Amino acid sequence: MFDGLKDKLGSFREDVEETAEEKAEAEAETDAPTEADESSEGTGGPSSPADSVEAGADEPVAGDADLATEGGGDPEEGGGLAADEAAAALEEDDDEESGPGRLKRAAAFATGKIIIEEEDLEDPLWNLEMALLESDVEMNVAEEILDTIRGKMIGETRAQVETTGELVEVALRDALYDVISVGQFDFDERVQDADKPVTIVFTGVNGVGKTTSIAKLSRYFEERGLDVVMANGDTYRAGANEQIREHADALATKLISHEQGGDPAAVLYDAVEYAEANDVDVVLGDTAGRLHTSDDLMAQLEKIDRVVDPDMTLFVDEAVAGQDAVKRAEQFNDAAEINGTVLTKADADSSGGAAISIAYVTGRPILFLGVGQGYDDIERFDPERLVDRLVGEE
Ligand SMILES: Nc1nc2c(ncn2[C@@H]2O[C@H](COP(=O)(O)OP(=O)(O)OP(=O)(O)O)[C@@H](O)[C@H]2O)c(=O)[nH]1
Image 1 (tube, protein in one colour):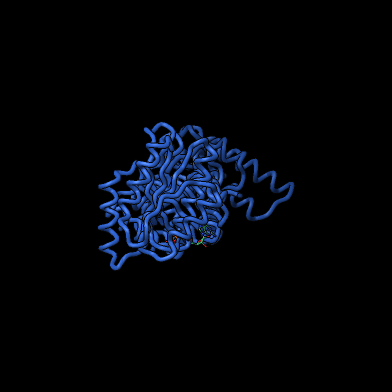
Image 2 (cartoon, protein in one colour):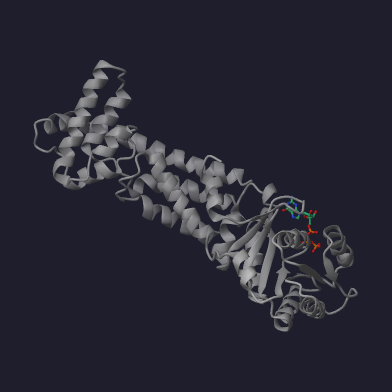
């Protein structure tokens, strides 16, 4: 799931690490010998105070966490301390496993100049932007991610971050989390606390997994001790009644339906009345995914909204649809304001673009991920877990 995007995010990390490494070595080549010498004379070193602060707290590329953690904080002493340690490292290198790379990095550390600057990120960020767009991340969302990364990485003092890799990981995590977690709320709590029956209407185009998601959520609620009635508001499509009937029978859930061609608002209204009369906790209403025209469809959704006044309207679309899903989410949100999204077929999606973009674009959270065709194949959407999947080892 989302493996393609995960690989691309991994490339960004490597890109920045490589750039920082090259920079460290280039600077070491030009600056290291004289500066290391001078600073060992006890002058506090050639580094400017600002450089020293950067070196101590931010130095991410020395590849030597023990050096990087102790070098700085105090502009007066930091340069000298760093230089002394670098000199010690140089000596050590002479004796033991040496190598030009290690020597240069140690000396570069003493100069205190290894910090991520805007120009260092230019190419990696360009590559990242291309990768996000290729992965169907919506343009504004990609821009927001890049802005956050820039803000987190350029010139910041990050005492707890010891390597470039970690610095990139923290920045990426924060940037992704910010866009993915927009609007999250505790769905279970909201349903449990609401006056019953709770009416939830599902919108979205045909074939994306709307009816299957209703069936999955019927099981989800029953498992949490809530009774459910399903309502088939898709009175347009031939076969829609039979399709939802199969699910209702398999799950032993009550279904309210009318003849094909009937008024969908009336079906949902009847289902709410049934729920009230029979102490049923939750009404799950399906709707048509296609009518003669898209205007008709949107007008129908608006009417359902007016007549039933649902507690929640959930938009359903498939993760594999990428940017199309994002555009549809906006469109459906305009017709009948949505409270959240169910993103289906996440199990078959490697791009992850819709999962990353929909909440930011609609301002409403993704609440569930469909991860297969079985009734139990639905997960509560957890932004932190998704970020872990994309950036972490999982
Ligand atoms: N792999 C996978 N398949 C899914 C998922 N959710 C639904 N499907 C499959 O997608 C197909 C379409 O699902 P439906 O529930 O019929 O879609 P719908 O949106 O209700 O479509 P209409 O009834 O035509 O409006 C079915 O074969 C489902 O089994 C999912 O999370 N993962």
